[in-house]
Amino acid sequence: MAPEVGAARHPYRDEAHAINARDVHFDFDSVPLHYIPGEVLATHIVNVMHLVLPEGERAMAQALSEALPQIEDERLREAVRGFVGQETMHASSHEAARRHLREIGLDVDSYVDKIAWLVDRVLGDHGWGGHAEQEWLKERLGLFAGMEHYTAVLGEWLLNADVLEAKGMHPAMLDLVRWHGAEEVEHRSVVYDAFMHVDGSYARKARTAIVAGATLLPLFILSAGYLYRKDPSPDKGRNWGMQFLNATHRGVIPSWTVFFTELPRYLRPGFHPSQLGSMDKALRYLAHSPAARAAGH
Image 1 (cartoon, rainbow, N blue to C red):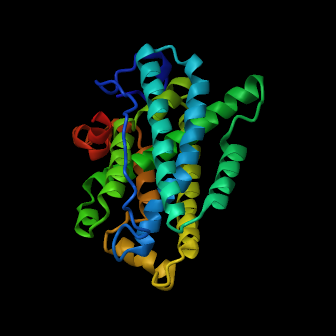
Image 2: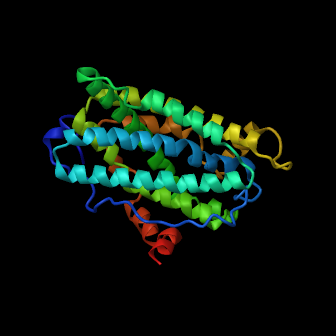
């Protein structure tokens, strides 16, 4: 387990296996607009992954690439390089899903452009130099470490959400989100350990974790609401807010309360992301993912 302070003085020994980007191939041709049958709002909650997450993942990969020269531990450097490769693959795979949804009637390109602009303006490299540049890099790493905690928790949920299969979710989309979720569990510690290596301040960790949760929750809700309003289907139902609460109550989507209940665990002294989820289950899924097998053939 990585220590809470002075992490840069200790060798990186988190995960025993190498983290690498995987070649995957998803066939979205037969995916309908509402690929969780009878669950319009739940479908759009999953769709948020195709809009919000890729832009955040690009910014995260950029920050880690900037931090790489400051990481002396070769094992952690290797993990960071693997993480960047995985996030690049995530972005391209989700973009392919977004293109398919656009082709069948859900055109959200203007919204994605706004998200990309906002992420770049808020979380990008502002071109500062010296001390300000270094402090901003530490702040971004802290924010991304906090965000990765939530994505790892959501990834664990996706791996265990038998309700999605029971509801008849389209296999290609189910494989996409479970593959992504499994890799989130696999690389759950990388950004945290990079942050601890470069900075390690508990005050920054706490502050950025609070900001991360306070940012992700409204972004997910607002994005899902936007997608629902852009949905051209005449039978999408009414009152997306009530659908959201109902889907949460039935366990079709994760509870929004996770953004509050997970914060104490993340801030607990001695916490490390390796305590999250089942690495064995994640790796087993990644070994048998239909998209990975399709790419292999």
